[in-house]
Amino acid sequence: MLYTGICRSDEHAVEGILPEMKFPIIIGHEGVGIVESIGEGVTGIKPGDRVIPLIAPQCGKCTVCKDPRGNRCLTFILNRPKGLMSDGTSRFTCKGKQIYHFLFTSTFTEYTVVEENAVTKIDDGATMDSVCLIGCGFSTGYGSALNTAKVHPGSTCVIFGLGGIGLAVAVGCKIAGATRIIGVDINADKFDKAKAFGVSECMNPKDSDKPIAQVLLELTGGGADYVFECIGNIETMTAALNSVTLLMELQFIVGVSAVQSKLSFDPLIMLSGRTLKSSYFGGWKGKDSVPMLVSDCMAKKFDLEKLVTHRLPLEKINEGFDLLRSGKCIRTVLKL
Ligand code: PAD
Ligand code: ZN
Ligand code: ZN
Image (cartoon, rainbow, N blue to C red; front, side, top):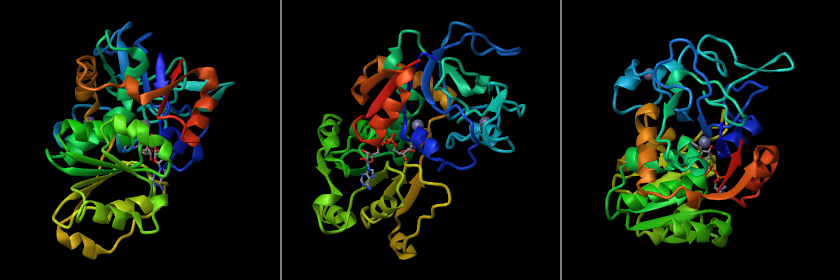
């Protein structure tokens, strides 16, 4: 591994709120590296290739892989022991004890082992210390706007949570031609950065006595066209659902909420024709899309550098987590 970003999902893993996780585990999933060696029968990559490990692996053969709509490869999800390779083994040990893998990737380490369908070769010329963000955060937000929401020109978008994912949503909304992008965050320190990403107005729910959904309905004259929840909080998911226009528009859940939490809302609000959707890795199929996203980055279609606020060596990983918890960073990239 060369570099890896720290994503809020890694923090969720540390908190133990993700489903079916087993410890001890090597977390981290937003990385880039160089192939050191390959196993028997591997033909798609070779030593020396620059690669991004995939949280959305692609077997290419299952019904989801063959369908242009989905990106959660069944081969990697169904009937598979969590945190292990497909043969049921782990490739990490520490003092003789088995260590589990995370999200098919495990990037907080100098060396990892991934399956051939959970990694993809990228252009050698990419800037390694920021292209790692294509491994999760950037692609997730950007794809949520472009693939899942299919934001239309002239639309009004609301983004709850102006972290790495939320700002990547803003990049997607802007490219799709949204004319109004409203950012919502309880940390006003995020607002300047958000504006640099095309967010036109920023709001702090703490600044008003009214519920945020009501504030947004008033501000938009009846609701936004698209609302993205990029926090992972049940309350903001419900508020987001109540902030979309009554016409027939859409709300998207990008944030990952704690296992066993339940989202509840009055079904009558769906009678207007509202749609509730979710997005995993921005809807991108890993092997097909990641090399293309890297090329788009190199062609300066978007700027990943702007998302990186801090850089640290692996030894200082806990400082990176402190920066995330205290809301002082957008993305910290670790050098491995
Ligand atoms: P982040 O911590 O960088 O950003 C979250 C932002 O939300 C911060 O700016 C917070 O200040 C803000 N916030 C927190 N609570 C509230 C609140 N109540 N109201 C308003 N704002 C609030 O995280 P991130 O951008 O790395 O990740 C965001 C979520 O997306 C998180 O749940 C993560 O697990 C999830 C995620 N989903 C996917 C996917 O494929 N769906 C991929 C990667 C990350
Ligand atoms: Zn598949
Ligand atoms: Zn992530």
